[in-house]
Amino acid sequence: MANSAALLHSLLPSTASTPRLRHRASPAPPAGLFCRRRPTFPAGPMATAAVADASAPPGLNEGIAGLYDESSGLWESIWGEHMHHGFYDAGQAADMSDHRRAQIRMVEEALAFAAVPDDPANKPKMIVDVGCGIGGSSRYLANKYGAQCRGITLSPVQAERGNALAAAQGLSDKASFQVADALDQPFPDGQFDLVWSMESGEHMPNKKKFVGELARVAAPGAPIIIVTWCHRNLALSEDSLKPDELNLLKKICDAYYLPDWCSPNDYVKIAESLSLEDIKTADWSENVAPFWPAVIQSALTWKGFTSLLRSGWKTIKGALVMPLMIQGYKKGLIKFTIITCRKPQTAIEGEETPIASPA
Image (tube, rainbow, N blue to C red; front, top):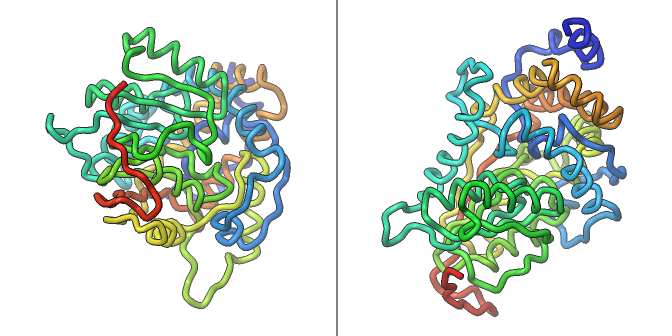
């Protein structure tokens, strides 16, 4: 067992030479630990490519679906039903027993940041979970608010598992999951009074269309919560990231099925362009710092090691990229960001505003 762990440790780039993770990236959940190689997409001025009205590069959606079809069971067996980072007090040392509680705390911190009401009269009654994984957030929110939750994912395996877990937890009447594209959601305008996206925005090739769809399905006055990986904001004197930064992100993109990234400021500009209100952002990089080292640590356990070997060399290559996430956080390049806003109470021009009823 010790020799097996040592073998895996020898495969991972040394973290001893890189000071202990101060900033860590969002797990397109388990993207780092259990990924398949994806088609290489061109790197360029990332904000421009990601924000522009562009379609998904060939093979992107299929690659994302395949990644999570393959990896979700492994992630669940080690980390549980929440396929996202945990939230920790900045500078806190955490042991493995803390991490699942920290994932729940991430959900609660996001709700608090967005000032989502929980009083009976105003609490959410219809929620959409965009990029739902196996539905951990949806089922938690359904329980918390007594709400109807609809989750969408590109992965048939995730949708099936989410529905199975909802049935096992007695929530089939409240939480359901289906395969759908976040950029073309199968819901009418104004259906949801809480729109939730926990660590899926990084997979979206067109951030403007992504946020536009979140706004379209939101009811008037509904909060929209996006928790995602971003690159740093550009300085006024910059029109692009530095070449070494672009190169680092490209390596991460090639391993994790990610299109070009954008900055928190890019999200703010998109939200403003859509006439969304109460726009706020925060950098939670310090608060997720313990998570990536914990994912690497889990890979060094007997269970993690044997699971990686069963998954094959492509998955191990994904594990090899995890230290690059740590490097990106340390350099201040990668920012774990929350963006919240609200749909106006009055209709956005050209959009109907039906009032959805729980169904």
